[in-house]
Length: 258
Image (cartoon, rainbow, N blue to C red; front, side, top):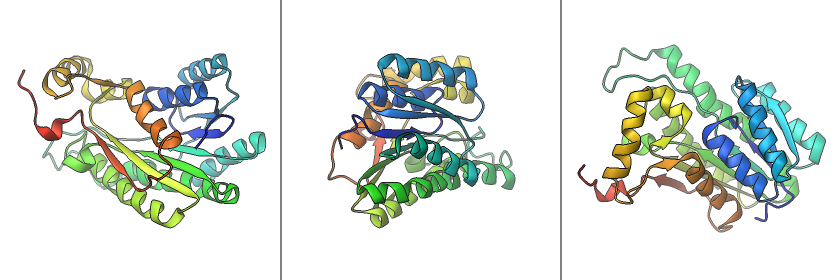
């Protein structure tokens, strides 16, 4: 897909992977919807960077757990540009919990996490599908997590929600073809503010060093690295759909010792 002149919606794009993806899409000539739920100041900064690149931008506040707000975000893009070519489902929610501590998350925690990570993503896809189908072309990338494949992650509820997201990716890829391609990326540790909030600053800084020292590629991932993979699924291989890609720094081959 040639994204130049196209329209991309990136949920949760005030910071981290979402912000990096929005800016990369803008640099490729796309018009972008920047979405945030609470972080207005950070979202404003992303909007400015995208406009400085030369992109046309909409800033839209929405909680994707609310179906009407999902529809409103898509309607804003259609009203301004008349089309939606790309959807990056990046918005996510978690509740950190110690591994194996089954009392640290309850039913409401599961519902709150699934409301964003699974149902919200579904609602966003449902909102863009009629427009992508009428155009005859569209690309959707879901931001999942390596923990969904390895049984790790910030909590069992978060990992389970991302496992459900992976299953939904496969279902949507099958049922929305051939007009719409749907893929997912599953990053491992990524050095973002979101991860710092989950781990705490001290552990976060330790993980940056440890990750680079112990994985086979000898690097730690940052938001811009994941954005490159997301955009590869958008403007790269038109023959690929239904792919759930682990971004694990080669750790499936084993880890190096510190």
